[in-house]
Image 1: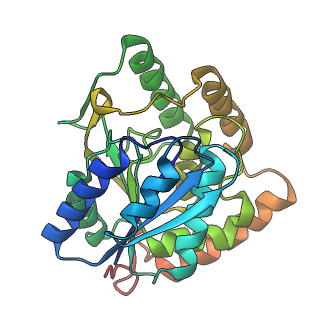
Image 2 (image 1 turned 180 degrees about the vertical axis):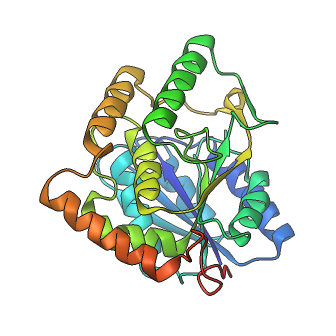
Length: 279
């Protein structure tokens, strides 16, 4: 089973074409799937369109009465999926504005079957790129990713800020068991939660890979929700908070992480054969 998590805020124009693309890719993969949309207090026709799409597609909707931001929206979606998914299921989080092409999902799923636990799409891998992103935003994003790479190095990974990722359901379930409500803790600092998840998985010792990806910002069908200054501030707060395990809570997390590593990984750092099974 593949669960697709779509945070949505005023995405009335993108929902129909995106759901059609998802359906086509899932049909070609011959896998059952379910789409989980978290409607984050949309004020346009998003709610009405989701109701109509629910009659045609396997769709569940979680509704926020008020706009709470991407961090809380993603958290609620991941917690819902973690409750209903089997450990061997795949969870894909992607943006709802049609800038993330579902055509990359088969390659992400294939990487998971190689024994990785998290697979991120990457503009910076060979063959990746971005279309329709202005020079200022490209520059800020590149600098941010290099800074995060320096502070939280993950072998073979250069993309920390893109939210288009695939996960083993088991690694999400483990993350929630370890960090609880603090899995996505920096909820008021723009899109920082996207990076925070990657940092938490790095702290857990999860095996992470990336595949090349072209961000199609020229296809974006809604206005941007990113406030660059707030998100940039969030990255510095994130670095200060997680570059080291601080205090008693940090010690508690470290003990739980070490127990997880003993349970899942061999002496070479690879997942055990049983843990590698992805349905």
